[in-house]
Figure 1 (spheres, one colour):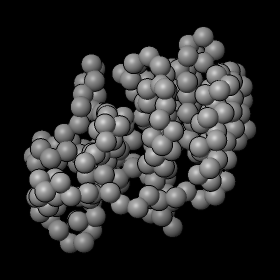
Figure 2 (cartoon, helix red, strand yellow):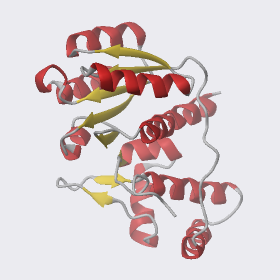
Figure 3 (cartoon, helix red, strand yellow):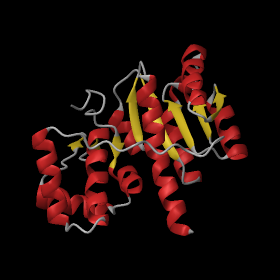
Figure 4 (cartoon, one colour):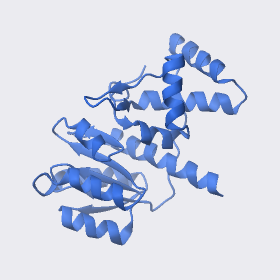
Length: 220
C-alpha cells in the first residue's frame, strides 16, 4: 500500500514528463482516455503528480517497452492496482559526487538535509542567503537545488525563477507554509512541506535526477 507521503501531490507535469520520458501532451491524452493516472490540480489548474503516480507511469512505460500496447499497459496497471500489487522498481542511484545545493538559512535544517544526502552519495553545498545561493549556483552548476522559500526574508520564489531561467536544473521548493501553487508557478519541479521527511527528500532528489540520467542515455 502506498504511504501517505507517496500519495501526496508533489511534482509538476513538466517534471514528470522528464522523469518518465513521456511527453506532456501524451500524459494529458492518457489521463483523458484511460483515467488510470489522474493528477491533482492546484488552484491555477496545474497538474500535480504524486510519487505513486510517477511509479504508475513508469510501469506503463516499461510495459510498452516490452511490447504492450498503450491500452494493454493501462489495463495491466488497473489489474495491479485492483490486486494491490507493488509497482515499485529498484531506485536508480546517481553517479557519485553529484552536487546538490541547499539554499537553506536554518543551520539545523541544513545539517539534517546535508547528512542524509551525503549518506546517499551526494556532494552537498549549503548556501544560507539568496545572494550566496546565486553565486554558488553560477560557479558550481549543481544537479539539484533545494530552495527554502523563506530564505533571505522570503526571496525563495524569486530564487526559483532565477534558477529556472539560468539552466536546466531540478528545483525542489520547501517551506513550512503551504505554498505549492506559488512554488510550481515560480518554476519548481516539486514542493515539499516542512518539517521534511528525510527519506522523502532523498527519494524526490533521486526521482528528479532519474530524468537527467535518461536524457543522457538518449544522447549517447
